[in-house]
Image (cartoon, rainbow, N blue to C red; front, side, top):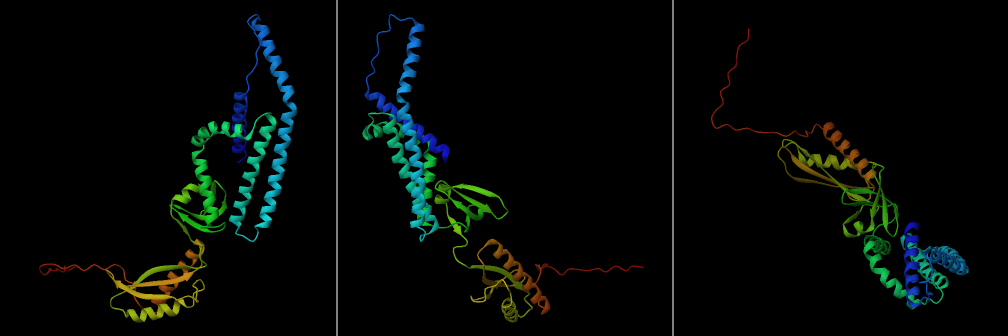
Length: 318
């Protein structure tokens, strides 16, 4: 962030310097009678003399930049305090926008002090030439910036939420104006440009306090499927990771290749860890319940039919 700010200051001051120098008509003495050495000496003396003359303006500009930093810091604190009742992302957005506005005014004021005679109109004219190059050079940065502003304003997710976008699944650790950092479930930290999140579909896994999970099982065709559903309903009512306040839904789903398929749906915590822990507990208790009741969970069966009777010969062994 600091490197981009310094680069922006350099481009701003350079553009304003060009605007200022274009309005002044330099007066040069006739140097046709001077030797190259004398010309070089005069040039160096003139540069040093002009630099010394501008030292007060440079110090004044530096003081203005320091005051701008102090004012931006204090205003940021005040904005955070005034917006503490708002969402955290919206409060941080107002703070950053206030920083940008104060720094823009401070840089303009510092440039007008460093370059006497520079007016806001001339400064804007100089920036007009530089803005084209800046726009092409920092196209992606500006794109990520505006995407970050929209993400912070519309708040589709906050810090601490688990999100999934494309192949990225993890916990949001920070949302800045330009990028978002996500801690994946395996511990890796991913830095994602905001434009990527803005252009692609994002699944916010922790938007609600609960998530619904579905697993499939089955019983053999020779078993009583309705009785199996009753047993599973009773078994899941004792699971610790299953939310008992929300309905547990168990239905016969269809005719499988080797079994009557049963669909089991329940609600649990929203995080990936809650999801895996609850799924493990439910699968374990389904297997144990059906085994204890003597109900078969069949392997795939394959029935083969031959066109003609198959002759089986049994050999006698001594």
